[in-house]
Image 1: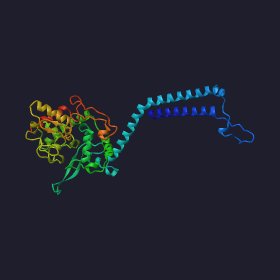
Image 2: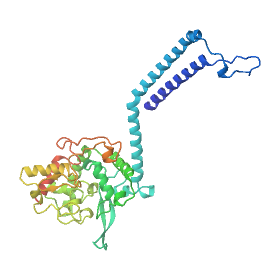
Image 3: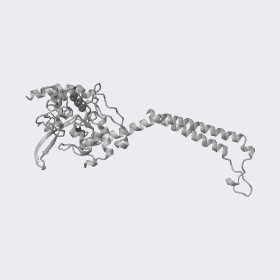
Image 4: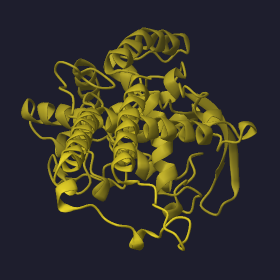
Length: 377
């Protein structure tokens, strides 16, 4: 409202100045033609007698110079006001198109019955707090195996562990052997780059804070341990429960759990032994100790890796190279505003969070518990 009022005021000042200049010019230069016997009623401009030098260089010249000075003053003041308002005008424009992007993304995220692409149906409504969806498992020949209830992860924390670029990659190509299809044109889906940004912008608008995420995980942990004990398979440690957080309680659709990627059958409540491998690599048989050797140094390096996640093409641990698919669980990722590199506009730059003080989706203490459990598999 303030921005619109300021712009309206500036526009009024400029218009007033233009009117003043035009009226002054007309007052000085418009003259009635003098009639002559035997001539047209009003002489053409090129037949009229002009002013003498004395007339031009007297009071008339003073009036013209004064009018020019007034016009220059009005223009100078108007430009100064306009430039002073430019930063807020640009900020307002960014807010306007960001709001438009979020609105478009929300329309796509919505259910099919509301004209969307049905993301909300799988992921727990428009707030995307996690859900369950039917999925048909087939064999390598495409033959039916079984119908299952698949946990669809919450997305209100997705940007606490993945960068926008990593989320875009998942949207473009989907998740193989899961209900998540490819949505980007490059992956065979219907969405172009602009639509993908709109969808990510909407997901960004529903993100909870690291503090809220860690609070929810802390509250869900004892509930998960109690549910496992009730099922007759109690967890031996909090690290094991965190690794499987949501398996028995469906908390956040398993978004916090390492098991959903590293354990076959985890996502539809038919898991085998923890860490046998699925979308993510197997973690059993001393794999962690081989990749991160050393009782103290190896543990510290693995905690750092789980905190920050992998980066495509960047080495980690011993003889391992990142793919970008491993999220960071106790550090929010960095973001840059670089349209030429990311093909996105209006992205707010962001520094990665401090794992020790702020954390991310989980606290560093939670990650340390998980790593202790994984190194014992």
